Image (cartoon, rainbow, N blue to C red; front, side, top):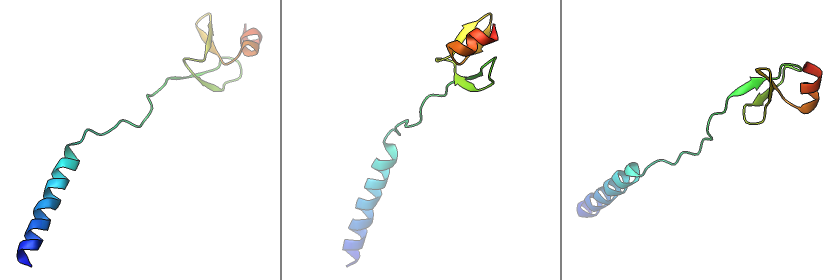
Length: 67
């Protein structure tokens, strides 16, 4: 019985060591910069923003109204 428990503890220790050495996957998405629309004050990602005169706009209509 003692040999069985010792063998079980060794196998468990090996699995624990191997499991902790796996590289963790990065499931989180990359952080994006949010910009405030110069006209309506909503926040949009910098990739989707429309820029004019150094200001960011969320849509073409806000761009036209804000100029």
